[in-house]
Length: 431
Image (tube, rainbow, N blue to C red; front, side, top):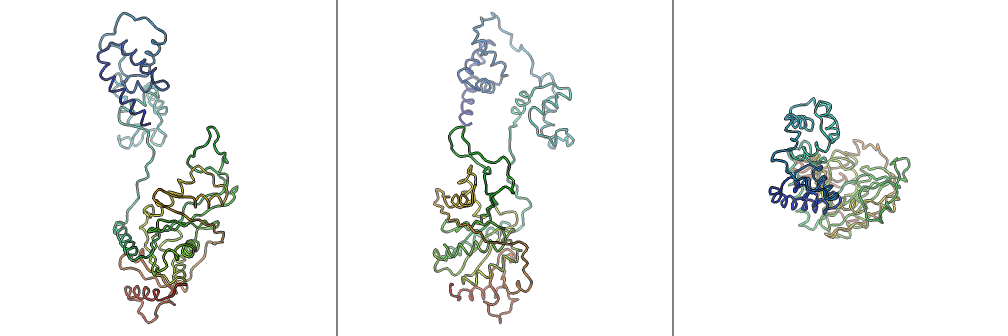
């Protein structure tokens, strides 16, 4: 596409210099010769570069091919058919009202909810008494700064007033942990994948005319199963761990994924660790309102002796979590165009993911059952000490079991509870 644009720009510059010095027939022949030299698509390219109708260029090609003798006369300057927009000054405003009715002040446009293809626009204009072809509609739109555009995913919705402050707080927490040699991980669940002979977005190199054949329909009932990748990305080490579940994405599954990472990788990577910082989304199985998430983390903290600090990204900002663009995007690129026909394919595809920045990924299959609808009672929640930070204690907090904390400390003293939790958990042996 870039090469075509360069050719068109170069040709337009040349024709702009030559055409004013030629008569009508000479211009046609020059345009026809240029189109013939370009081959397939040359007529359209030359027409755009010269700013003339494709029919004019096509006529020039025909004259060259047939060897028609010169007519012996040249049309006077300004002769020939007038442009349609000159005959009908209201044509262009009518077209623009159809294309962008809200901007042009016509919210009742007949094509407000319709795909605005050039064919549809031409048909609507013709029905209103203005005869015009679809190619001419396209020419008019391009002349007025329009082009075919897809939706752009850039709107984040209503932003929380503390959005940027929370980002800065997370960065400060991560920097402090890393400076002290303590692990910092980014966690999240990747999109659920159906396992079977299904189409996977993207393309890969294959012999021409031999695409991988997949099922026409992605019916879940026909799937071999499902894959629920839950990832832990070590921000400092630039490594990923993906626990691939086969049941449900629950808080218990999220905590078990963290536990598996720590037992297999984390404990060896950080043998002297006393603290762990986790950055996660605001919702889902690891949401800041999820009771099972906090009780599960308290059990994990007691088992490992780590001080667990959790920082949630504000609602609607999950794409800022590092795991999204450091790990999950690389996985998606690695298995693009590859049908996920079995759980083994899922595991091996994820484990084979690397990047030029040195990313390494481990992946394991988790076929445990994680039932939904598990209720955490008030008594179970009361057994967990959630010590919120001074800034946004709902998003930033430490977690421990109350049985691991000195019961004589006044629980109303929030900062005191935080310090006691940290001191108590540091004193626990790693198990």
